[in-house]
Length: 169
Image (cartoon, rainbow, N blue to C red; front, side, top):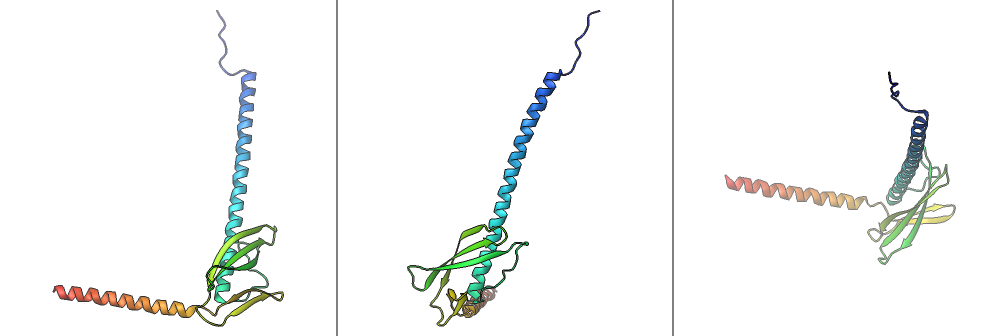
């Protein structure tokens, strides 16, 4: 009786398959580590942007700079506001630099603009004797006027609609 060849893989074939599997899994591990580092970098920049937006809002409201920054997701950011003039004398460009106080990473390039000239007077935000930015008085009267005008526009629109509905009857 002739001897049949045994079905299955030889030792060499198994070692080659194992080597290919090791190379592919190493490549996947390196790619996933790069992905995780990119996600961490995005999280850092997002938190720095939130800290910068908070600082711009505080400046716009006329609040003095905080001595100790409030933590964001357990991270602390130091804020530096750099004011620069624009072509319009009533408009000022504000660049915010957020520095992660735990890692020392600097995140720059957050821009904001302040419109002066709406009100006279102002408030100076100072730190260590240096003026960071001079702020106008709070801008809430503009918000109130805009809200009143919007309410009047809604009332006029409702009155016109009611008049048209009444005229059809």
